[in-house]
Length: 204
Image: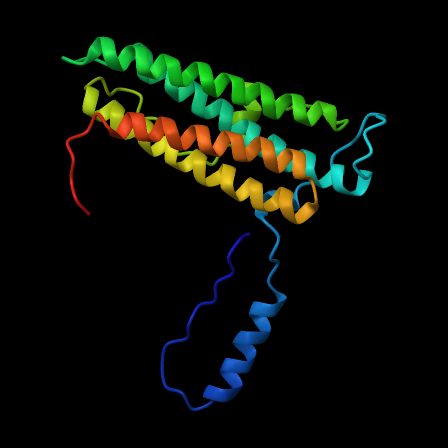
């Protein structure tokens, strides 16, 4: 769920009680639905799927948002696979390609779920470029440690968005979509572990 924030006023507290009440009022008026829920409702094709239409029109845009981020993640995996250099080249070249293959399966899971619900899977690169919330992948890096760090960031960010999606689907009552995102979240956490294992151990 999206968090709401307020800006504290600088200065004294002459009207502290009144200011606090006003701030509380502003908080209450803030929208609490995720930003992605503010999209236009999806247009649906006819289907005998018994998930209520009122749920499907909200679920589909949310799944398309996760789809955009998943496609972005896949392209970042390939960028790392193509360009990594260093003494661990073979191991990392293969690891990054294995991650890419799994993420491609996640792309299909998300896209096909959208279509199963009567929607249109929106997965063109132009759509992805405008929607993905992942950090852009550094385009000119080649050192193995740089790719490990950059892909680790991408996997962690996508894991976070997948878990946000689980909460959104649960709130809307779509257990099947929540289950898909749970599977994806677990897999992404595993690949993040594999990537980070190539870094020297360090304590927080």
